Amino acid sequence: MDDSSPCPTGSTSRPVGPCSPPVQLEHEILTHPDVVEAAMIGITDDRWGERPLACVVTVPGSGLDVAALRAHLAGRIASWWIPDQVWVLPEIPRVPTGKISKVALRGRYADRARPPGPCPGEPDRLG
Image 1 (cartoon, rainbow, N blue to C red):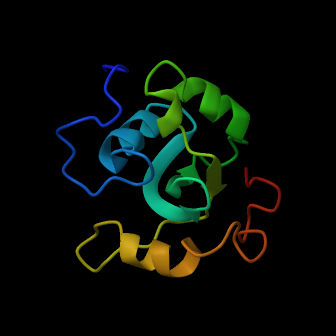
Image 2 (image 1 turned 90 degrees about the horizontal axis):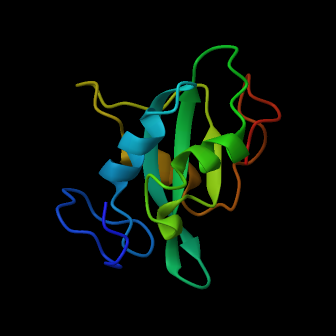
């Protein structure tokens, strides 16, 4: 990865936040041993217009530490790509064909600074 370029090239998806390609972010988050699913969406940010929000599903009982996930990403991706917020969800919505439904994720969460309350089964794990 080349940190010298503010906007990486080759992303097949729309960037979220300042030039952070969601496919690459999802891939790097999935390299963490406690994460089994990941999806990135953009959320409104006063300074940048939009920042990435990581929605993850963890290995049952893993107790993912959001700070540890951010530390895991440091050095793997540009520092400005690292999501400010990581939400641990019980599941990530999918369309009938099995693909992750980012439309559903955006509909539920993109206009919120935090989910409306704890996610079912994940009471204290929002970062």
